[in-house]
Length: 115
Image (cartoon, rainbow, N blue to C red; front, side, top):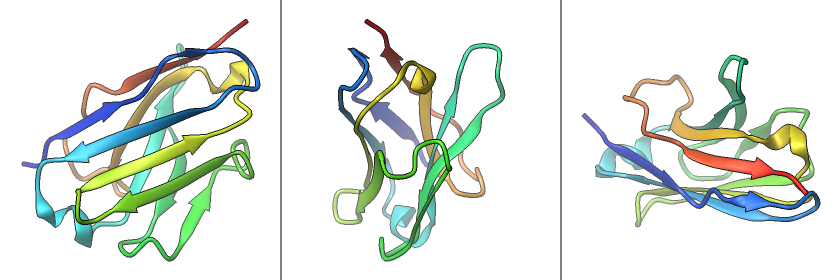
């Protein structure tokens, strides 16, 4: 089973930026469409962004479009999420997984946007 380890979360002020990383433990990472999800307190986990196997195609939730950028490095088995112009509504635990949520969830990384 592939292990996922997310990192990069932090406390940031509104308008700030963060870059999240997700490291996968197996090379099969490269054959999966990958995605970032987030879960805010009291809310269901939601899809934030997804990226095709080669990185040539990306999709974003309307709430993050134009502010977040998903990317991947198939040599390093790592998924990234660049988050700019953060606002308090982005506060959540962020997780990565395949787009179809086929692997066990990691521990996530906490992003808190607050002044």
